[in-house]
Length: 310
Image (cartoon, rainbow, N blue to C red; front, side, top):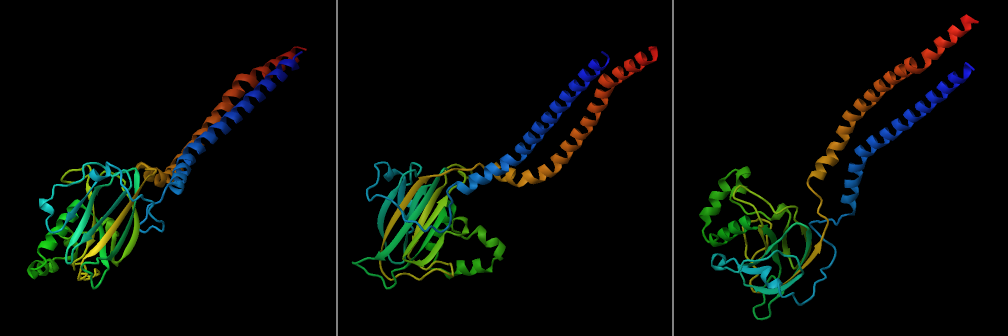
């Protein structure tokens, strides 16, 4: 009769220990999942998302007829009279575009547009000789730049006849030249001395700066004059015909904080995991001591008293 409560207590204690082990396993699994899952999830998002690169090997699948609203999404601006032009794009570029035009000798023409996040833009530009005024060199330079750089580019074109400005610019230290010099977008979208080029670009954010943010116009510049870059080609010596195809596709836009989570997950795991293991270890020791004092010792004392009475 005395052994029955003891066996009952031991079975109950064994069930409690099994439940504690299950709870610890579940807790450990949840902790590991919370640390590993974000990094794995964002890594898979990056791997399976469309990749934007400076050079694309695909072709632009663009119809030869534009949508009715496309005319308000792009505009052509000449480097010779940009300040007199008020045909700036009114809407964001969210559909395919086909446009062709002629660039005069010793000049440049740009296609202005508003590129926005959430889309990938693939540009296919082909350059051919104009039959009425064929050039000596039908190749050209192609640049993608933002509006501030386009303004500096226009100033360079207007002052190209005077060498004093460029000589003074060469006297500036190299680290200060970016203040006055124009640069292609992300310093890579410059394709010089070419007759055909394809490239893709995706905008990460609408942009912000010291002088304000919002939608920033971008300019696809077809250069037909000898600018200040030492890698550019000379003036073509005649007019060139340009055909531009812009293939617009929606893409997965990964939030900026994913990079912080991806990079910081491993150091956080190295800090948090030892703390969790230590806390669980100390809590397990206290639970065992409390369980022994609450359940085992009273039954052992009652068993000793009964044996002494007999």
